[in-house]
Picture (cartoon, rainbow, N blue to C red):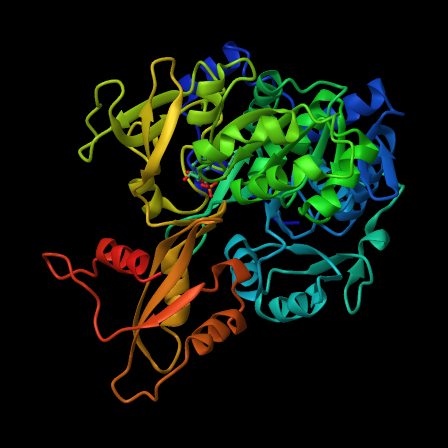
Length: 542
Ligand code: AMP
Ligand code: DBH
């Protein structure tokens, strides 16, 4: 078993005075995920916790399953602080796996189902993951083949566990054991998992979250979103994403003793009958999906009357679209502006309609510190538009193993530079006005241009490339790659670049939507590529 390095070596944590304050204020309750599932299962063993199609697991069953996996993981030498990449779609196994890992203090690394070889290899190598948990085949893609390739390149990766037909790997069902295998339990202040950042740099950043801080964001969200033991939450977005996981998400609902229902696909034809059948009361969507649901709502053949609250976030939801939610779906809209790094803002259920449709909400906590600053980090007058900096009881103080990047992404006194440009309204609500970070928000799916550029540059015919956002009515933004070919290269078609990116093994949402060949890039005064001018050209050429 590996001995984990102290947390402080991997990521900066809260200075002791802040930690003490957050405990004294009652935000950090000294709970761990493993222990809280035990408690809920003891209090109401027969209540349903997770529904996946015909499968219905009670709290008792989820708890037993997590225990059996914890024993099995421990028996295979997985222990406290070890990293395990978890890439599962919206299936019940996701919960037994993560609670099994939480219990032994091993850290799930939350990959998304869309991630492919490049991302997975990076997560496995960078985190020195000892195991990787996958489904068998999803939408025609065989995750077992990808796992075999990655395993050949990541020396630390001992095990691949499969929820389904295992192929050459180990079936998850073989891991579970009834006999107790001793393990070291985590402390509430220990890391619980590594979440992913949408990022703006060449490689994704890993976000270290502790039991204490994340659990606060859960019960804090529950209070604001009205989640209690009668809540039925539909997981429409990928379960591992921070939004459906924690805002208030599946984990918030499990904390409250409610019911989590997994939706395999996000379209109304799939989701609406599940809402009717399970009496779903609350769910969360990204703006493009919210548009599709609002269009389908009025003529739906299903009874959606159980739905009380629709959370929309991940990208800016236009005021116009926001106004349509209640008439179409007869539920309360709650805008949510959050980030896996921490800070989450919600409009309140009893806010005036104008606030609900025209702002992205205010922070969970009275102790979320918000600063809106100019380019020189000087605080602006109330109501002015500027960069959002934040610090608080559930916002990280640094990314995992990224000391250089942390110097840029955090101020000396620990504020996270969100990269978002906001304006604060009188009662503390934030309006997202734009973005300073080099990131493209494709309907809630974040694309770091630099990561895609690095891949395109590997094409033998490419001299240079610049990836920018193009406005899009449906997704908000799409991606456009401007490519300069080598002087001696044969002409290429755009599809060749797209194919190259896909074959390189990047998630499909990162493949450029549009590719334009140019002879040169517009330049800024000092000769840098002017992404601003490229964006203007891209928008005009649509
Ligand atoms: P990540 O850091 O990858 O978790 O992505 C979080 C980012 O998504 C935020 O910093 C914002 O740029 C964006 N975002 C999330 N929710 C909203 C929202 N409701 N409106 C506008 N942008 C949002
Ligand atoms: O976009 C996000 O990352 C996000 C959006 C809403 C998030 O992490 C969250 C709520 O918690």
